[in-house]
Image 1: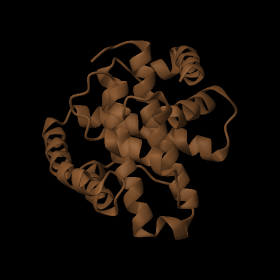
Image 2: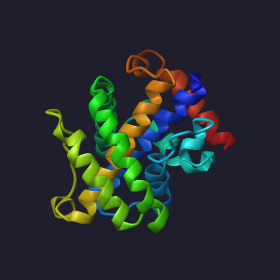
Image 3: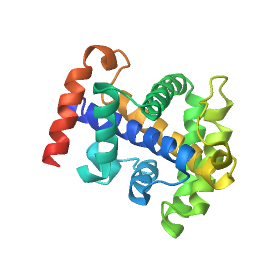
Image 4: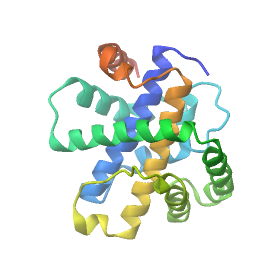
Length: 208
């Protein structure tokens, strides 16, 4: 996997896109179906030729993540942006724990591979697949002592359909965090090279 700023920016945008969608669902109960599909489809991109191929090969499919990253890292933030950033940092931290737990990585890979048939039969945003991925997250990542606390509208969060989407998206966020590490991404870069990431994300948005 290439380890350039370009690849790191794309992978980090994937984390931001998943986190943004979690925020949207937690507060409003809805999100864009195409953005959701991009995140969930990335879970099944196990042998991509390029980093962008993980997200379908088109920059426009990551535009939400790129825009969110530029806004959250580079400008004054609303409360929901602060929540999104918290999810991103939590996802990167959880991925770091997961990276040192080879047994859980193996279980995750096996369970996601088993879900591939459901994805091919029903599509990436069908409730059957979302429920399946939600269970994968609940049985693996959710068992860590550190758990992501999602903020939002209680009545919305209590609906199982929304809770399942959130868990599936957090799983997709972990997948992008894995990709970010594989492309050379490290948490310290969010502090010391943030401006470079923002500038490249803006360039991608302009050209994409």
